[in-house]
Image (tube, rainbow, N blue to C red):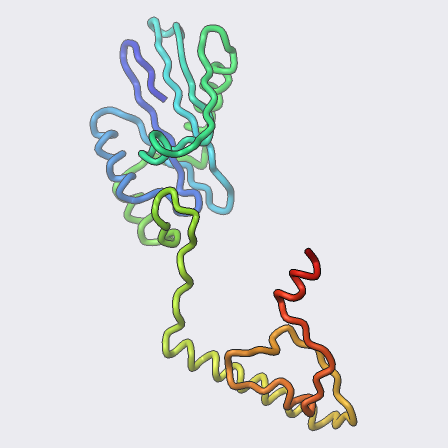
Amino acid sequence: MVEAGAPQRVRVLTSDYLDITDPEALRLLLLLQERGAEVRVYTTQEGSFHLKADIFAKLDGQLLAAGTAFIGSGNISRQAQQDGLEWNYRVVYPGDSGFLEARHRFDEWFGHPKTVALSDAWIKAYVQRRLPPSRSVAPGSHGQEAPPEPTQIQHEALAALTASREGGYRRLLGHVAPSFLLGLTATADRTDPSDILLLRDDNLVYRCHLFAGIQAAG
């Protein structure tokens, strides 16, 4: 919130929701704070905080003379402000009393018990516990990042798990000793060396591939 008058006041409220907030952005806010702004962080813990609003107020002494608020989905980023498609609602005072409610709600959240003053110590602690989100794709792209390839150790662990499971199946079948075994699987075409049919004496009653099921449903 920016309040123009005597004196001028700038207040910024951000959060640690989902660890999205970049520590470098927080350090830039520290520089703004050194120039007189008040910056606080809402600590979400296991909750949510996804509010987005820009509030500008003009004061005449202690009285509100005019104000404008932009409330909506737009982030303060080049992509959102210039190239992206965002929805924001402009509230102008006087004329729309919704501005008064928006300003009042901001004051409530700014002074909420879960908010703390931004400091270098808080940023350092945030960096230590933060789990950064996965690397994003190019701005404006609808593609998805390719899944990571398993390491050699992970390959060995998966192979050991598969062998352990198969051993358990074979011990169970050896104990039950059925005269005829009928099974159902969704992974008949496996990428590992497991032979599913061998467990069932090569009895294949019916097979339906994924794409065949999709076409039948369409």
